[in-house]
Amino acid sequence: MLLKTFGWSFAITALGLVAAVFYGGWEAFGIVAILAVLEISLSFDNAVVNAGILKKMNAFWQKIFLTVGVLIAVFGMRLVFPVVIVAVTAKMGPIQAVDLALNNKDRYQELVTDAHPAIAAFGGMFLLMIFLDFIFEDRDIQWLRWIERPLAKLGKVDMLAVCIALIVLLITSFTFATHAHQHGGGHTDKAQTVLIAGIAGLITYMIVGGLSGFFEDRLEAEEEREHEEEEEAERTGKKKPAVVLAGQAAFFMFLYLEVLDASFSFDGVIGAFAITNDIVLMALGLGIGAMYVRSLTVYLVRQGTLDDYVFLEHGAHYAIGALAVILMVTIQYQINEVITGLVGVVLIGWSFWSSVRRNQRLAEAEGKAGSDEKAEVSSGV
Image (cartoon, rainbow, N blue to C red; front, side):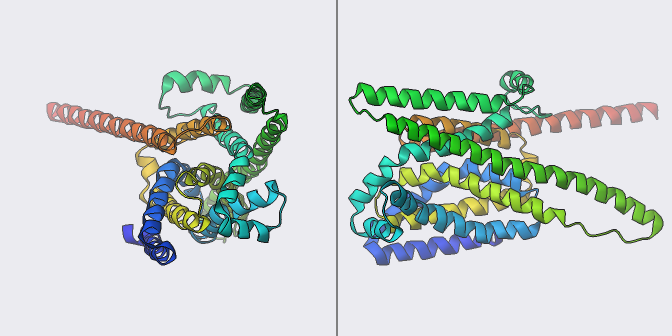
């Protein structure tokens, strides 16, 4: 099972490391290995959240996620995206941007760094909306009840998540403009860039997340109708019609997953520049990491880990909230990637430990109930 799920990841790792040695020797090998570990540590929460969505999709769409989705994640976000960012911000053609990335790496890194405020605002707002929508939803299973219970009550207020996200964006852009002005930068245009990019991230979430939720609701309604038709077919002996809606629903959930993955990858791509400004090594290292995140997502789905450890999804969403805040803060201040990675790992580790304790308590309660029942039966005899 493990080899079947992670086989492609192992193969890509071997190919990527060999390619790194041929490209730049053992130093390049070390850089690629470090980047792969960085991507995995930063994106573990991504895998948990992805698994929560992927488990609702059939085997065909899970395969699409592992094949087409990997091409989008590895080549799109880890290779093409940084080049596109440079091309757009520097107002140059894509060929010029590629030439710059390969032949003038310092200038390329400088341009990507200049584009960071817009990237962080877009990704930060998208991730913040995911966290807020999760935390304001009333759930049967709650992890940190002292936080989640009152927030679930507040969540009944319409559009509260959007209002909070916009307030955070306004404060961030205002703080950024004030800071730049105090330091003589006069970069009010950068504050506008942050504001526009943040609104774009919010709109993207509302469109993609809204479509995904709409089709998911329709799918659930269709499944309920299908179940009723099956019962009717059993009684009458007639065949029920095929359901085609699953394809539409799965497609929009797949689209949502890709945008989600893109938002998660922002910090990895930006963080990679702290290690190297070589786009080839960056693509190899982050690509290997992205493969493991994909495989881990499928593994969590197939093993039913989220059903066994019910607080994992909560921990992942808290990690998303933390990452959203970190991205917004990095618009003005530099934060070490180790801190970013550790926050996610600690929150998920804590939620896993809480899940294990919950399972132990349930097992003890069942065991106690079973022994009480046996005692009653024996005393009755």
